[in-house]
Image (cartoon, rainbow, N blue to C red):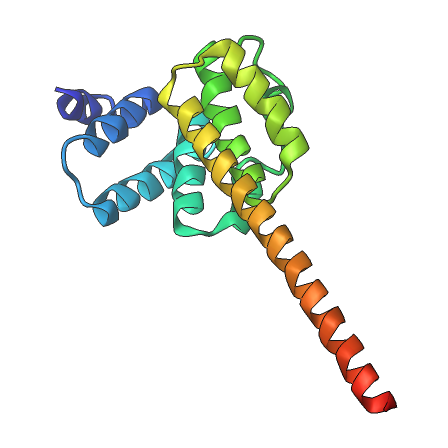
Length: 170
């Protein structure tokens, strides 16, 4: 049904987004879904949901450095769409959940926590909000693990250097 509507109205971006959502749960391969998302982003590069889907694809592929470009280096919907007067809760959820994931990968946790607070107020049970939380916690854990690991290595190196100096001074 969505595919038939999409063919009838090929220049209506929300139909493309619905098609992508439907395709994601109908068993397309990751490669096919990725191609579909890329094509829709190329066709509708300024449509918020095309941007969000494409940014998620980039994050999934580990191409984090490309995400800011998708949003014209803007981290606020009003800056991204200055001529738009109205935004819906779904717009904020889509936008901030992707940015939260991106900023989690960058370990910019102070901003992530603010975005998560906003998302929690808007839609605490939304799958995108849950995904944002999951990425945040995983990246926070990775950052802490790396920090603890590096502190342990520093102590070992310091002990080794002290022992070598002691040995050399005898």
